[in-house]
Length: 199
Image (cartoon, rainbow, N blue to C red; front, side, top):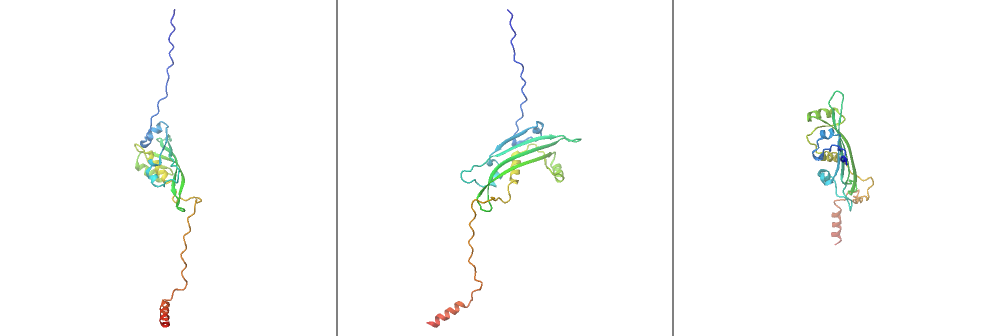
């Protein structure tokens, strides 16, 4: 009796695993080589400078997380080396003090920015003066949290105000109007003389 050959499953080829990127120490060039994108969210307390610019939410209102995503791309230019870009998107909502009624107000923040990276600080400084885009020196490791925080702080309103305040401030009490005619300094003396003469 002939034995039938054992059927083996075909060899499976798995796609290569993508490299994990740390957003606090981001290798932008490596992310661009993978046409990669990183995303996530942080608590407001993770971005201390932004948190310090806000006030506590009223009542049972919750603090919202900072949601973000960053995409790095390498753009080929004719007759020159490729340009390295980072496209950043972040959004959250914070509580600020209204400068009109002094009550907490919710302010939605949204940032969409693109940054072009060059080799050195000197190159970034020279190109940034003549360029409409944001030009940065490429760091060995970019702290994406710091960049997101900087952009959200810049997005804060200079003078936070409700469109319509929930409760208007009480009107200041008007000071009593002063008499138009200044008091006569000798009026009291005349009263004293009159009192003496009647005694």
